[in-house]
Image (cartoon, rainbow, N blue to C red; front, side):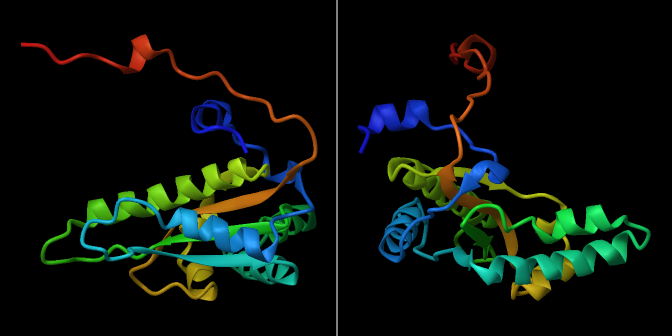
Length: 189
């Protein structure tokens, strides 16, 4: 297992289509989700939850995506429909991180949404720490109410991201990162 600094400086997204079997074992999935929960959570609300897609469930979820896609694009070509059907079928494991942010007397919704994002990032980092590749994806289907309903989300819930996890089929290419001089300033008086 890499040390923490090496882990953080070497993490990079792997394309979902390049993630293959083997995926995490049942014990590793439990470990990934346990780590995903170790995030700031003002008020101990657990304003997130997880939906796991493995095996045939990935294509079953793809059928829900296809139904919504066909409603939006009735003239879609068969290859477009098939592409949508396989949205969640490339990696052996896809975890939907669901934001359950809701009005609260003390805890702002924004903090709850950020906590869900932190859970998604912890999941990505934990996958990397275990030697897997990961990719955090949203896409149109993460915002489509028909898809969300079909996946069992409540009216107030939203998908923070679909985290695709598996074994990279080749080297993972890093992307250019912003220069600190472009994104960091020091406040002064």
